[in-house]
Length: 510
Image (cartoon, rainbow, N blue to C red):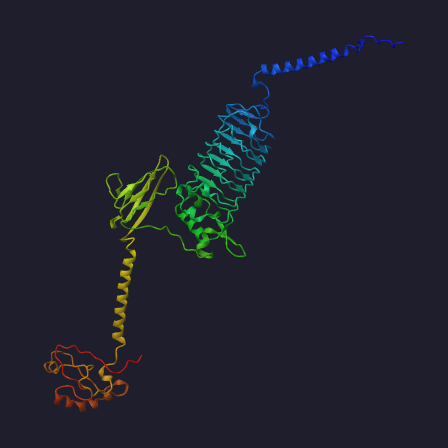
């Protein structure tokens, strides 16, 4: 007996009808799927699948899209193609993948991603935003900059990477940034000075500011930094690093301060270094010439040249792309075609050659633009000999000096170390000796010389070298009789024109 059927209940399908019912259900499902697909294709693509909400998620003001402080973990999709400024700062976007935007934002020139905890950058993150001019990645958790990471950004002018944890920078990380003007790398963990960014042949041509202050650099490349143009040094900041004290470091920064470069002038008190030794005392770099390392005070050196040399005077200005004119000593302007020895080069430098003695003096370079002007003075000193003949002139001068000194020594020997005169000599029986001094008797008789000459025997000197009066009176008679000089110190006659010289056989006792 079958159980009674409830009212309103559908009749149960027979076992033979089950396959056809299942087929109909499958067909209905496929019809629904097809309908939904057609509906998606019918509506415009911009009307759906976009999570950007200019009233809740972000703030849209003309071509500016500001999504700051919205607790976002990913970049909103469906960004308008007209977006010029995109602000995503103060969110939680920790990874910037290649697919953060699936369309090319050709009008986007400023992208702000600071304070996001960002620690990963895809190598293709900037493929669709090649027209960026301003990129802010500061205050994140970036630890390294891989090779060619910014290569697509050929129009980028300002790159902010300060306040991260960057410790490794690949040598090719900034390759392709041909328009980069300002690079901020301060407050990181960088221990290697990125010299390739400012060095000739590898530097970024338009880079005018690089801030690597507050890092872990101990020994900067002093020699390479000294030869950089002033317009690069003017914007090169490396203060607040654990620098090792050295006199060359002091000379470098002292030179920059004399040139009034902003990098040394604005942060003079923040350039410090650690003294060598176990105590590791930290002192100011500009104090090394006084109390600590006794470094020589730096003075601006003048240019020196030799005759027949070709010299180049550089107009090393703090700003780039200025129009430069030169004025020679005597307020004579350097004009093309008027002077055969001076020539202004395409980079604004002044070439002088061959150098002449009259080229010495102060040369003035006037560098001007629409908003800036600078004046550079260069004092040139020309040596009065050629560079190759420098040694020969020095040898001649040395020989002359030795001759003068020798002459002076001989004069002093003659004045102070000659033997004693005949009045103090011992008895000499050889009256014809060559060493005897001779005085003409005829000169004494004719009184041609008003001076009175007398030779006194040492025995006639009293105490303390005084003459004994009694002995003088006793010899007066002999002097009258002979009409000459007699006695123990008797002299032989000589011709009147002879020179009276005093010699002695007694050895010199010093």
